[in-house]
Image 1: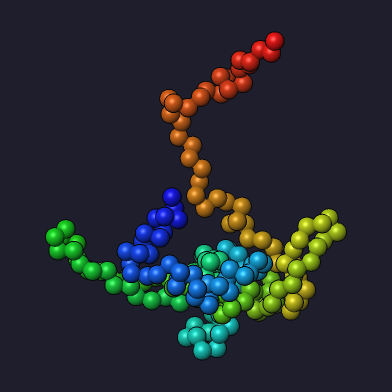
Image 2 (image 1 turned 90 degrees about the vertical axis):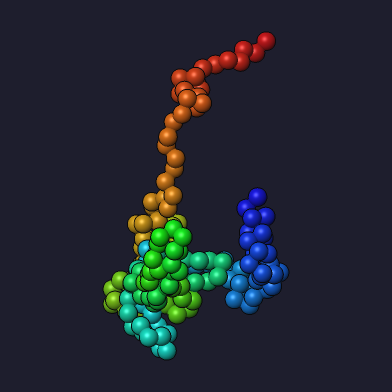
Length: 174
């Protein structure tokens, strides 16, 4: 159902779905299996031609389909919202963070505070960790990853089965 809906939106926008999937950036993103930058990591912009070169921020979202990240407080732009006179709404200007390619940012070394590349190692207990190449320090997974992005629905209705009815034995073998 979701795939059909995506295809319909692409067709109504006038974009060919085969053409969108054949973009080189999307093909390269589909090849990747390992991700070093996670949501909640502190990163620094390392692309020298970027206007905010050298600034640090926390990753808000990681778009793995397109190899892009959105960094909190960096790479902002103004987005114009049209006025809707029939509803009485005036036009607005919103300042939003734009995405940037993941290769334009590097993780911050926890020891030196400078950008570093990453390698992966196994500890004695068998857990896989990210290790900074600059200092050899372990980069821990962000705490925000332990929380769910969308909380589970906890509203109970009368159509739900009660807990004592769930554990009641109803099958009697012959």
